Amino acid sequence: MKESNLPKGPNREKKRLGRGEGNGHGKTCCRGHKGAGARSGYSLRAGFEGGQMPLFRKLPQRGFSQARFRKPCAIVNVADLEKVEGDVVDMVTLKAAGLVRPNATKIKLLGDGDISKSFKVKVDLISNSAKAKIEAAGGECSL
Image 1 (cartoon, rainbow, N blue to C red):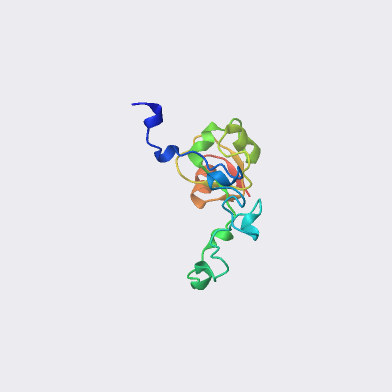
Image 2 (cartoon, one colour):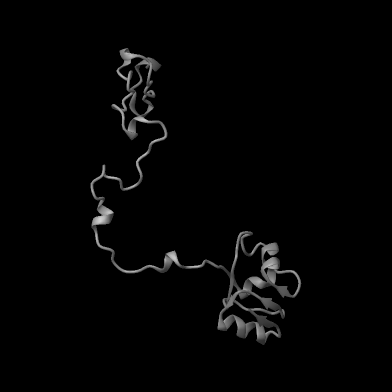
């Protein structure tokens, strides 16, 4: 088998546009005449149907989602606090320990796991079980 005999398949050569009339892609370069589609930088937006009312606007809206209004927060469990150096737990120490991402804006502490050290915790949100475990270990919580 020779390379010249291989089937084209997915390795089809790129259309060579604007290289004269002989290759079938000359003059308007497969873009038609005038209009936005003939211009450089044009791309259809998602759901565009050529001016016809798009399907997503024809269909009624159903239900409600809070996803648009949710303010995300980083989750940390009580068991993870053992990785924090020192006895103060706040945004800076959690980022330094690698428990939350550097771009985190809010932190919520959940009560999964056990704790042996006492910590002084200052986070944005805290669950009741996490608060009980921290206070039982001799620590204190503040929001």
